Image (cartoon, rainbow, N blue to C red; front, side, top):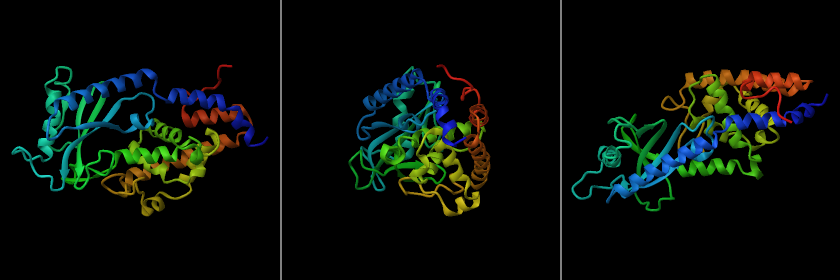
Amino acid sequence: MSYALPLLALSQHFSSFFRKLNPSPTFTSIAASQYNTIKGVIESRVRDPLSPRCFLQGSYDQSTAIYTINDVDIIVLCQLWQPGGGGSGGVNWDRNAIFAAIAAPLFADGRYSSKVRYIPTSMCIKVDLGIKVEILPVVFKQGTSDPLQEPFRLWRPERGQWEDGFARYHQAYLSLKNNADRTAGNFIPMIKVLKHLRSKSQLDAVSFHIECLLHSFPDWVFTGGPATYIRDVLNHLASRTAVDWYNAGLMTPCGDRNIFTDAEWRWDRWKLFHQFVSIWAQFAQLAGEATTQELAISTWQKLLDDSFFPAVTAP
């Protein structure tokens, strides 16, 4: 039997799989509501000289969230400049002063006052509303005043300093990679598949790192139907050893840093992740080579979980 026949027969199964993988409209609505409310509180109550503007980053905004939207990442861009921004009105607007000013209206609001958390070493302000909201205060880089221009500057507590950040540019690079003329819209779905496999195997790999990893892959591995591009992406990743990948480095889409470092994707965590990828690739290859639809389905179920990938689909 030809290789293509079982792939075509499973199109409805993959459609069902992605419906279960994607967050429901209910979670999307809740996340949007929480974002808009907190955005309104911060922008209306934090005054000059900060006068912040809020925007989204992370899986919710980039449409790479899976299952439920359980966190919302909000960038709060303040009208300050770093380095050399100086003070205003006698206030030294260092990291602590900025965090305190952003958190103050939340502490004063009965909806959030008991749910706000941050400490002197925190990178962001957290608000636990069932959906976890993470608020990241940032400032302009010296010489920049356009809120659409990046990098901005964010506080890195592990290094105790302000560093460049690229939230909007990162999102733009993911969108460009997902374009129909590059990956036929399969790049974002593959991010979700790899995040699903990571979560199913309880691996320690953050979403941002997975996005960077897949962005580095050639466009051609994302072409075809799900059975094809899932197999090709996993095979591409398994085709090199973990050591080779790590030694070559992995740059962010914005090219600002290598994430194969102890400070980000540590070697031991990457090595374990790659070991699982090698197993996943074998299952995807076997599913593609299956000579019967029943065997193909059962193999995909072993890889993707039978609670997500159905044995049968509605006519």
